[in-house]
Length: 520
Image 1 (spheres, rainbow, N blue to C red):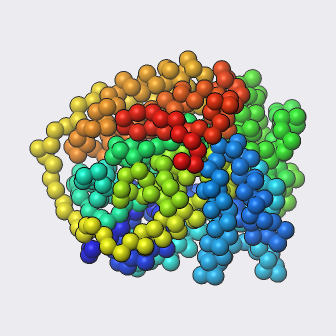
Image 2 (image 1 turned 135 degrees about the vertical axis):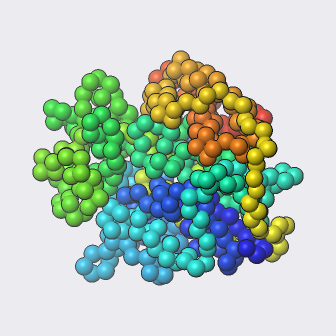
Image 3 (image 1 turned 45 degrees about the vertical axis):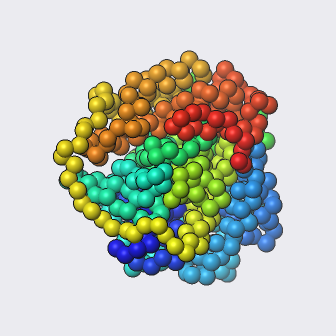
């Protein structure tokens, strides 16, 4: 590679959006630890929220986003999101991205929870993520190099600046890649839970790597649990999009009672945290919850992916009742960034779910995640494009690390144990005793060594497990410190929000905890 190169870690919508808008040519490398479609974006059934309909307005979208986020949002960032989103989407449509339209060529807008207008764009029915990723891969083909099956294990730091990454292949070979800028687009950490909508590759790596490098993380306690995952044989086997409820499906108990009656004025289209807690409460009482789809017209045609999922697991669509449970879905927090995706570490950017922009507040509004990836992915690229000179060249140097000191840590737990701990003790409903137990459990695995130890002689699997532990500890310890309930963070011992926490976020660096104002 030549000079002025950019490294992007991750291959989902946020990563590809950055690549799409970068002006740097033939000097962009995208790393993905599995295949380029092994990401949450590829799985995304929901659409993209944008005020493009004639009867809609960005100000209404702005208000809906703040309401869903329990006003824990950074209002300046939310305004950027909802004002710039329609412009970026129009650019993509002009470039050939096809969203679902009617027979007259007019865009079809869906309705989802927390939205006061139909403003959700879909592509391929319930295959929006797959369609957009396919479009972007075609757009950047020949402009970027995609390296599959090579895991980024560490950020390369010099004099407090991120100057590249270290990677590891399955055969154990470690490489150093130097770059002018590194963009983390690795997704969140909902894959740390047993019931999750996330791809198996989403294990919090980017958050842990940035934290080790000295970057600040924030709002790690705010985990969104999607209310409706298909429940079969005691497992959550796949997501049932909120768009299904937007088209008329309703949640009901085993005896046919409407679950959300009297719970929230928006009933089945209430914000996700409200609906998820209602389902969890019913299952705690020993009941089961179903999504009644009998009122949804042309279900198989409108939701082909969900229909195939149901049929693959023996759920009879003709009965019209899908058994559902909540599952970990989205992290509202992450690596702290400014409006250009810059972290607190020079040379390091973060975008998408791995980043904490503040747009989602305490609870993300449905279909704002893809919008965030698009808007802030473009902003990261524009920030990089503005740089006239870069301090480093880009090159790859394969090295052998046979003489490196092996990190001395206790035997690592099975990953299923990590997921079980977080699900049981830091789940939808939390309280001090269980949170303390979770924090103690994570801390027994020598977390300080994971922060500063030599990782190079560990296997890629061991490093990934260590990063799961580190990120899990950040989630649990943040949840313990926030002594109130707000959005995706609900504590039974502090069941209401508290004025002390209004407009305040928990920020963690390697050195200390800090209470910082939202929007700092």
